[in-house]
Length: 629
Image: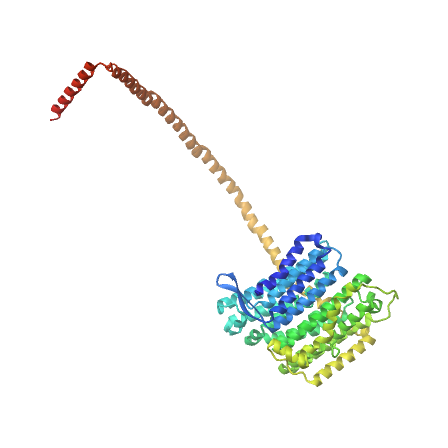
């Protein structure tokens, strides 16, 4: 099976649902989940695939392949997509068919991104992913804030996506190849520019500093959208790209260190942001950027296997929590933490599943993110003790914001009324909760060894002491936040609640200068160019008038004179034709008729007349013969 068909399968299903519109709303969830399941079966059936070439541009085909890393993430994305699609009926009421269709189109773009082995195919998947994300965040086109947030997310990531185009152009000019595995072989400025371009595009997609704010705005989309885009897919693809291109970062001599420090600083700074949020979805969004910081850190220190394990574990945990937040929003009518007090008690099944996700997010042993974060920290320790200490601080903050959310949803509810949700609402969360509980095995023990074999990369050795320390810290911080969570959050800087004013900073640094430049150019156009045009306008009008008069007097006169002369010549020709040629033809015809009449007169039928005529002709011939001699 062609790997291109693997990506095309959900795209065809998604396009069909989008085109069907409201007519497909009732069956959209089941139908789209079936398509995603077929994609999952295809991924499992294909397994690891050697490189395939797909004709695209002359001399520039796509190169597609599936290795251990892309296989693990493709399976993860398909499973999360199935769970998200099945949860749509319980959380979205309007235009479900279109939403499910766009989710499938997004899955198609992610699968193409995961299988791409050159920058050309990667760019196509990257662009489709961005377009689909805009359509998903702006699902309700009547909601002007959601549309504005989708625009912010798209423009922010697109501005940094220019880096991929720069990397592609540099690779084509410097190495003559767009293959990802050949990028580290470049030297000089092409290598440096390619590394910078890939780093910028990946950090933007992964919502790392200083552009993390777009992820906050993206929370205006439906919860199922957040559960896919901001857990297993869009932001995860930024981390995946850095893990995939880790050799390029290392070859540059600086990009790997830059990625490591940006990742760990984001993990700390956005951990503080998550800790002070009063909106559950905003807390989860900030924690997503923070957790992706661990993946970026892993890519920077060369921990490919650790980064892959953390991507898989984080996808299960965060998709579970976003879907739980959506169910609480639908059942209780709020996503504010004050309104969600006791939510896990009022909706016990969803509460149990969400508690598993929050404990895993907090790094409680032996749940998923405990093992994967420690694998990342072990890789960081091999590179730099400072990176390890900063990463350890980020794990403490993970436990803090997870503990604060736990304290809220497990507190005594203001209302004792239970909320009953059907199994179709919470059923899709069950496999995600199982992943949140068990995926730490990817970084530990026998399962970890198999994961290493799958990825073709070694996990850094995680010492029992390190596991014990991180586990003890998680338990201690979770207990502290249970007792003093609100006080700790209130003691932190107020700017963290507004995401460190990152969006305002982006406007000050980028948007306002561009607007100011546009105003300057507009003023120059009005005062200089427009005035020059207006000054030249009278002269142009006078010249046009003169040309018009010349046209009327000279050109038009010449044309009219030529026409009159032509009429006169035609009249003379007509008279000559009638009086000369026609008269001559008529005279010749008359003479011919008269001669014909005379020629019939000798034809009497009498024999002596024929003999006389023959004698006359013979005499005439004799005379002519004699004259000719």
